[in-house]
Length: 501
Image 1 (cartoon, one colour):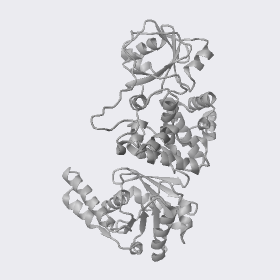
Image 2: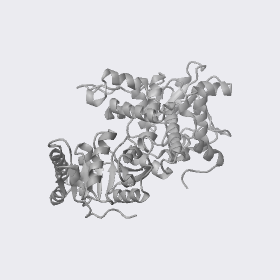
Image 3: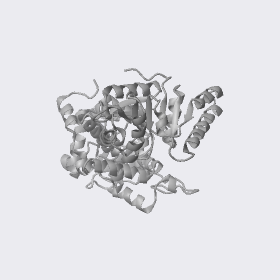
Image 4: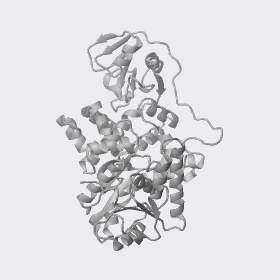
């Protein structure tokens, strides 16, 4: 299916930040744009905002002044929804209320021909439900942009139960022609990104609620070890806790209160206190004038290791070789012994459980890294029954490899391991339910929320059988439904197949 030609007019309903951004994207792609807003003067302000954004690009040398003038000249203001009827595609970006969206789209539909495509930028409402209020529900599709629309590449093209596949294909092709990275999704709660991303926040909040680490430590481990661009607590402060909590609550309610999506009491308390993050001056961190960011927990310098024995291949082999350390080598399953302390990568069990199973009291587990050779920090936990000095011996070994060590309380899956496992599990569940393809899910999570790797591709790199074991160990340790493995993940792990190719 081909994209709409650049000569086709595009209508945008709503001239706020998102609507104006969408109008700018369409105009930059060469379309004549009709911009409408019900609030008096809002369309004019939206167009002025577009001009200011274009002027900033000109000032930075990213856009020629003549091109900016041409983009702005393609944006005309409309006085009524009916004035958008000549457009081939009309995108609404109004308040997240079903009745409001149905009413304004219905007015356009009543005035337009049968071939007009109507699109909703909703991030939380059902496309099926919006379409049910229209005369031609097959002509409605979701076109979910991410803020700011001119910058963010991802567009979720969402099909409701009645959406004509040809309509979705045309919108997908049109978004691609606009320079976006479109993905197809089925209309289910949260679509792709707002559903699959829930564990990124939920696991961090759970770690803090369990007293395993503080927000600054979690953020440092997620960025310096996990490779994420922002830590979950800094990101929640940026988004706003009222917004982030509301999205989680909405997804939780839409899934009939499935515990997998349960909101956090820790975040609820912040919302109740009015500590909403950057916009209120305080969230998990303080943004008051002169406030400094709290440091992550970091182990003090410890003596270098004495006797080190590496049993088989480990995630640390490249790092060990680069450090100049010359350990003894023996056959085994990836364990490392450092002056009598047994070190293992996290498999979802607590260090205390590993110690009990191994019959060895002095045990430490360490976290997953996006790239262990390039990581700057590692989270480490020691078993409850370990002798004094165990943590220092483990820290000395990792410090000798050039890593800062964040000691955390003994919690199953530590920080990165449990987060990546939960993200991959939710992504697998979305594939199982026909929400999107594995390729589109991974593309959505890298383009929409800047994850360093798609969760399903990351799961395959770890090994699906290993990831399944992590989830089963997390579930066994916590009895929490959020860790129940997806049936699709289990099938692929046991069957030795992959999500990609």
